[in-house]
Image (cartoon, rainbow, N blue to C red; front, side, top):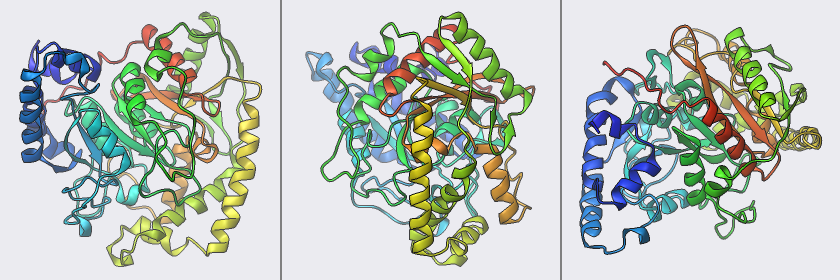
Length: 468
């Protein structure tokens, strides 16, 4: 197998090769670091590359591997490189939150997520780029390189987990954690042709920082296939003391639940989302084609969708409030975040919006009393060009953002699990796809359904032509 094939090999397969001692952690780390050095100057997927630390960890793990008699006892992702989104702390590494004035902010602790990443045996290659404070669905912070789409560098990789998605799609790492507070995992997965899972609220801990936006944000997974996603969720999931939300551990692993024969499901689908309207034709066709495939597999399909109109105003207010917690002078913010902060309103406005969001969320969850899964577009339009909205006013940009990402935020509000999967390409060669939304606490259902779809429409063999 040549180096390019290795770079695009799913993480579980790489972990198996390491256990069989066909591949060493050091060889794999060197391979990915070489690709980062060659490709990332134009791609902009990393905000910081921890070359020295990663190589030291890889050498240590390679020595461990040589000495161990039973490799099956190793952690599940022993020796597999990954990277952490630059909203989250890794001890000894900078955490800039996508803001250039914080580029030298070195953190002295690990997020709970990072602790679990390390316990699972991963090697951390650095930090992936994010939009400033994770607030925007494109990764273009002033003074920093924009994160570009590996399928076409003129287009965005999405946001706020845009760097993570670009890195996985370009074969710079085999999988990555991200976070999703309004589509920030699912949107980059859509833009870059990946699987992107936003799990249920309380599935993955936000320790030690906790929550400050009514539970809309959660960590998630970006991978090239569904089984990698399930396996990554298995190691990230679980309560940490003091969490404000928690779920019971599943009876069987998500990996096992994904692969078992699935039930025939009652599935709602829609190609239009109120208040915005229809998806563009190429994305509308993805939903319709998949609905036909699912019907042929014995699932029961009916066209239906909740009305998201009442949720737009309160969700927007809660999202805006997130920018206000960072003690950064307004002059150091990008223009969009500056405007959001200036118009965030009072504490009373926030609490009123939170109350409204909770009421409307109950109504949306009630929709699922009649359905197991909802099939929707991930976004209503294909990826936009880098800088496409840079000349618009903040108010105009906000309208554009809502019209693009409208299928996603409702399920951050409700806390339901949702998985984005790639299903096709535009005539410009850009990925597009759909999302599957499950009942609360039903990651296993949507992972199992996504796996069933993946066997019929395999996408992991698709990879961009990286000739830059």
